[in-house]
Structure formats: C-alpha cells, structure tokens
Length: 327
Image 1 (cartoon, helix red, strand yellow):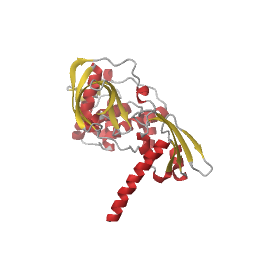
Image 2 (cartoon, helix red, strand yellow):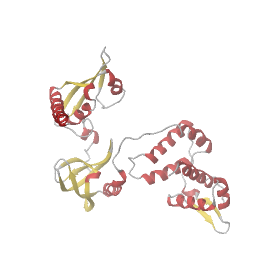
Image 3 (cartoon, one colour):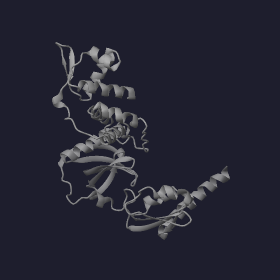
Image 4 (cartoon, helix red, strand yellow):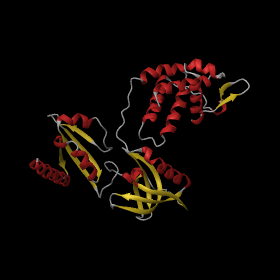
C-alpha cells in the first residue's frame, strides 16, 4: 500500500472519529480526491473492521463510537514509540498476519490526536527499518493458523514433516507447546509422540498438517528457557563448553558492541584485539558463526572446536585448490 494512501486513510478515519457526520462530497473535499476514491477507501475501512454507519435519509457517514477504542493519554515519546512500532509491523517480513497488522496499524495511528500525528510524522519520515532476511511468511500462513488453532483448542497435530536430519518425510503426532520466531523463521516447539520428547519444528517444513480429535495437556514443568538452555541459537548439543575466541582489531569493535549470548564476556587486549568468552551447550552452531569472520577470528579454546574448524578449513582449501588448478 502506498504511503499517500495510508495517510489518506488515516485522515479519513480521523474525520469519522471527530464526532461529526459527513456526506461523500464533504469527505471528497477534505481528502482532495474524487467521490469514487472516497467510496473505495470507505469500503477498505469496512473490510478492515472499522465500523461506521451510513444514514440513507441524510446521506451521511459517521463512526460507530461504541465499537471504537477508548481515548488514551500518551506523551510525545510514547506516541512516537507506538507509531514506530506500528510502521514496523506494517513492513516486517516476520509478521504472520501482514494484512491484519497493516489494518491494526492504521486503526492505532488514527486514534492519536492530530497534534501528536503532526509531531511524529516528520520524525518517522527520517527513520528507516531495514529488516534481516526472513523465511517466506506468506507461504506458512495456513500452517501458522492450524498450529495456533491446535494450541488454542488443545488438539493434537497429525503431521508429515520434511526432516533434514533424517533426510526423509516423517509422519508424527505432535503436541504443540509454543510458537516461536527465532532469528529468521517461525517454529513450533512440540512434544513428539514418535520420539517421546519435545522437539523444534520449522513451519515451512510441514508438508501436511491437520488437527486431530484427540486432546492434550502441556507439560506444566515445561520451560522454554530451560529447553533451549545455553544453546548458541536454538540447537542444544551434547554437553556444555567454554569457548574462547580472539577477534582481530578490524572486527573486534563490531563483535563487542552486540549482545550475542547471555553468558558472553569480553576483554580488550593492548593490541586492539578482543577476547570473547561464552558458555554454550554444543559447538555446532557457534562453529559456523566463528567461521563467518574468516581469518579475523581465532579459537583459543576448546581444542575440540579448534580441530573442527581446522577440518572445515582443510576441506575448503582442498575444494578451492582443486578448482584453482582446473581454472
């Protein structure tokens, strides 16, 4: 949706919320568009759930105040934060209900007094939110809805799942405990009847999913923080490890200014390099993170991680060396 249309819809909602009633000619004049555009905008508001009445006798429109949110008193800072959040929702690739988020954002902004809108608007025009790469949320809208409904009704899921670990499509019955967005994709944390344990499932990898008639209860002792433990991201390994890495001066500042893990500690060396220490459950995920820094990172400990990275490096040298000779 273009920004000028969003602004026009906000003005339209504000007019309707003013307590007055308007004929289509009035709205056309206020908005600076023809009546046909006004009718299209009114129809869009109706589909978005903004309730209004049309009096056929007077040919006037007004908002149903009983179904509107009550007025709230917000500071300029609170208004700016709220509008920034709603703009973020409208553009965020992680939103599972993008159209609904857009509609909600329009409604929320419309409730703000004009003075606050005028104050926040120019500031928001100077702020740009660049989102990280994300999985295709539109592709999982139906799956997301099925999992959400199963959790609401406490109904088990009958699924076919494309397991990268087993390299096969597996059939299973799941008891969904949580829906979680982790870095770039949506996952459900669910108890697997096949494996007899709680596992993490990426929504994109369900090839078939439906609710069953069987009910379930979530284990009252389940805790998401305990489930992930000290995994670097989301995959817990076989045991805890203390990892110590030296980052060279060229990347040290970038590494130090980000909170990568809840256990991280950093110290600076006199030469400008950074000693990065962290306690993690498993080495597989942090290995690939370290490799992303290439020759600007050196693992100091544990020795097992040094050997794993050396093995990867040797395979890379073999691969690139072979192709270099062919060239």
